[in-house]
Structure formats: structure tokens, C-alpha cells
Amino acid sequence: MAIEFKRSNKSLSDFSAKSNYDKPSMAYQLYVKADALRLANYYKEAVGRYLNSILIDRDNADAYYGLGICYKNLNKFQKAIEALEKARKIREMDFSICYELGVCYLLSGEICLAMQNLVKSLKLNPKNINAQIQLAIAHEISEENDMALMIYQKIIETSPKYIKAYNHKSALLMSMEEYYEASIVFNQVLKINPDYYRAYLGIGICFDKLGKLSDAVRYYRKFLNYKPNSHHAPVVRTRLSEIREKSKINLSPKMLELVREF
Image 1 (tube, rainbow, N blue to C red):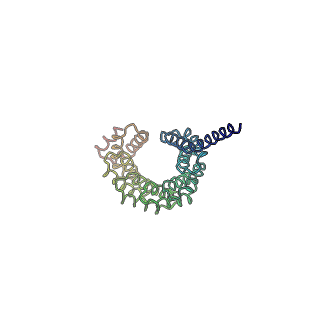
Image 2: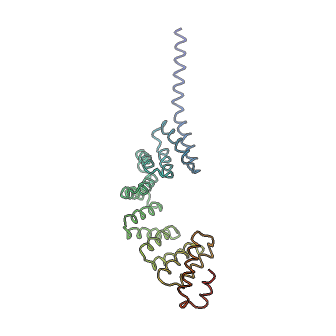
Image 3: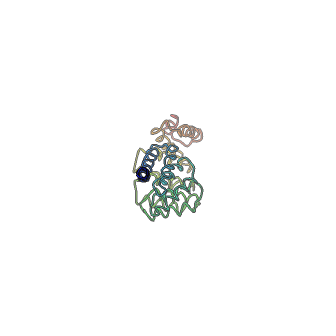
């Protein structure tokens, strides 16, 4: 009986060791499946697998990071922040984690913490354009428009083909009622991409606000030529009709004919 007991005990020990050995593999498999679901935008489904992976391995920064991204996309910003803060404790010098934390703090309205994390992300990776954009947005929310404009301009100078920076800069200038300056930025976009229809709409609005109605009509028309089915198109056509009624005396016969098309 003693011999049998020893054999049985050894078997249980082997089983326990094998189970412990399999744990990292199980955690990794769950994490990989969660990542695949997240990348396919199945955020709710991914959350469960990330949590199961973390239950097995609580030191996997990637699992916390993925969980945070899922919560962010589910608009559960506080849960996202909690997961990302855990990821940062494990891997402090990861600029991606700091960046996502900055975004989540920004989305939750905690602007100071957003700026702190975005600045840290940029210290770790100064070339992260997305972090620069989000930092500029944080300054906009804080009504620090000069700082925001400076950041957008810096991005434009270092990455002259990055249209998103032009868009943000022009939108901010328009909100400041600096329509002439905004129109210049839109024209810079058209030099990069002559088919960028949003720039035509932007210039049309700027000229409209500046009272340059004939120029506004010209750019509204270009916008409609590029994007006749845009959700903005009905508003633009209505505005063209208003300009036609308002400006009959001031417009040339050729311009009147062009406006009547709308």
C-alpha cells in the first residue's frame, strides 16, 4: 500500500506541475484571441478574454493595454483609465500606454491629467503626431488657443503633407473668427491635394463670412461638384439660393447664371 501511495502522490505532483506550466500558455492564448477580437472591433467580446488572461497572468501589460483600448471604444473611460494605469505600472516607459491614457483622460474631461500623459508620451516619442494633435486639442479645450495653433503649425512644418493638422488649425481659426487666415490654411491643403473637397467647403464658408459672396459661390460650387451627395450639400444649396436673392444687384450676369444652377 505504501508503494501505491507514493506512486499516486507522484502522479498528482506531476499533474500539478503540468497545470502550472500550462498557465502562461493559457494566458497567452486568451490574450491573442482578445487582441484578434479587438482588432476586428469586437470590443465587448474581447473584454472577457482579456480579463480571463489577466486572472491567470497579472503581469501582462499588453493585456491591460488591450483591455483599456476596448473600454475606451465602449465609452467606459474610467475603466479604460484603470486598465491603462495598471499597464503603465508594469511598463512605465511605453509611449503608447501614456498616449492612450492621455486620450482617455481627455475624453473623461480631466484635462490636466490628459496633458501630463500626452507630454510624457511625447518625451518618450517626440515624433508621435497623434499625441501632438491630442495635446493641441487639450489646449483648445483649455482655451489656450495660441498654444494649440503653435502645435498645429509645428506639425505642418515637420510633416507638411499631414492634412489632419491643417484641418484642426483651420477649424480653430474659424472658431476664433479668423476667416481670412483659415482660408489661407485651406488653400495650403488644396496645394497638397486639389481633390480635397472639404477645403472647398471651408473656403466657401470663410469667404461667405467675410462678405465676399461671389468668391463664396465659386467655392461652394466646387464643393458640390466634388461631393453632390454630401450631407452638407442641402445646406450649401440653400445658402446659394439665399445669396442669389440677396445679391442680384451685385452679381454679374455670368455669376447670376451660375448661381441659378442651384
